[in-house]
Length: 230
Image 1 (cartoon, helix red, strand yellow):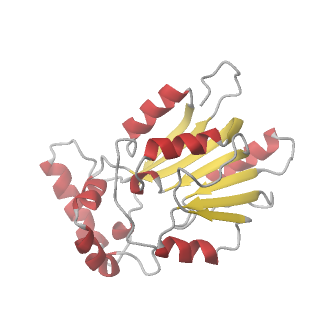
Image 2 (cartoon, rainbow, N blue to C red):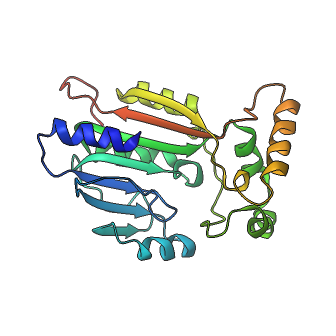
Image 3 (cartoon, rainbow, N blue to C red):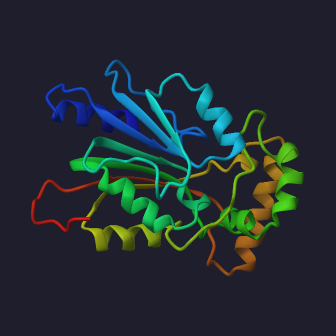
């Protein structure tokens, strides 16, 4: 889906080379850009597992690791900003997202993937102590997964949080999907993790989603000059 949206964005720009920012480049965040050969910049926190993965990537023309409130993101410099499983693991998530959206040109696309803080999986992720998460990571996550990473889950890391954010910032949510992608739900004990998530959802009396744990959105920054500026 994201590949299709990037192709449409490239067409709208009359074939001009696209500038893409990947926020969360240390965990993954790979985009299928086909033959368009955009300029891709990556940003992420400066943590050892993220640093190792980001430095090994060959698709990034520039990489900046550090405090995401301070890394260089020039205003109105990118046609596409891809936020890949970042918002649920950083502090000051709203301020970080403000900086990323400010980097979008008018009419640009914000492609968002994140773990849903209101899913049973997200609840277990943030409720599990750090030492236990580290102990379980190797046995639960698929081989080669980057982590375990911090589990912060501020209010923005939910569908309702993103919807409220977009309403306040004058952004348009064009597409909104749910999926299953939690590392432990794709690992060697996926069946056990799924059963735990369903049990937690049942105990929450429907407040937590026991099935999907991922939110995927396509969000557009309007061209309208009268839209609220960030």
